[in-house]
Image (cartoon, rainbow, N blue to C red; front, side, top):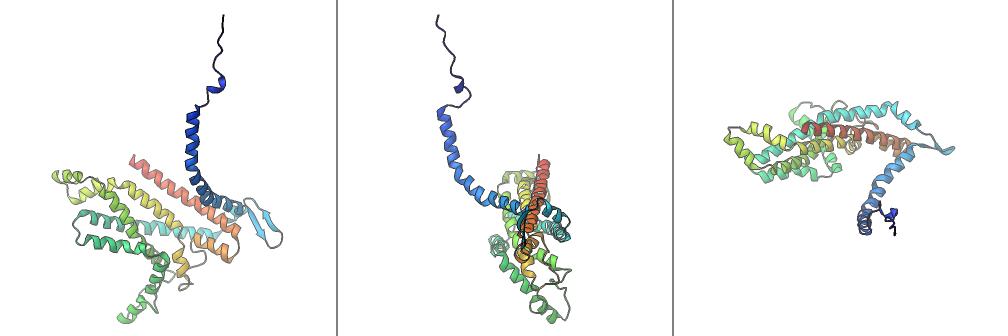
Length: 306
């Protein structure tokens, strides 16, 4: 009697050679992306975390301090002052900017706007202007002694509120950011509106729905995903506020401090205070806060959509 032995156990759990070859080919295709991703995304984060755990002293050199910088940051009034300011900026400026962009997109999509192409280009044009140039331009317009505000004061014989004063400079920065990014968000909303089937509008009009009903019952629900994406981008951009306060600090030194926003505070620590290790700590804390708030908003919006 001949007893046949079972197939080798080593071959049961492993994929066939052809499948293994396809898997290796797949890793070969994505390896360039993984290399670039690790170099430009993971490596800076890892280096910042490394810096935040050490302290560089003139005497004694670099020493490991653990989480001391994080404890210092949580008791740093300058950091929390800047964070509170950008949170206020986010709560006021972002709804205004997205509301204007949505109105412009709805006006374009209505088909009842004369000169639609000119209107679209005009609203989008500020986004093509570099942020530094836009801020310098508005700096001149805000000038109470040399700019548009000063000219209006002299021409009308009145004293208009100074946009670069401590009471109004945050509103002035919000105006610049709104002017820059309304066109960008308008294009996002308008592109989303263009893919909504017009048969839905025709059916609603046959049922007697007016334009307001069509907007609230069809258009806005249809572009909810675009609204969420634009809001997430705006949240991230608000916490990254840097160009406008950094440039407006020269004409408004009493209104804008070196810790006016967390990003500006990080820049000051790193390049003026030579505290790169603590600046890395502030950057990591702000990155985590921004990620948590943006993710929480997106998660809540997606649950509502479901």
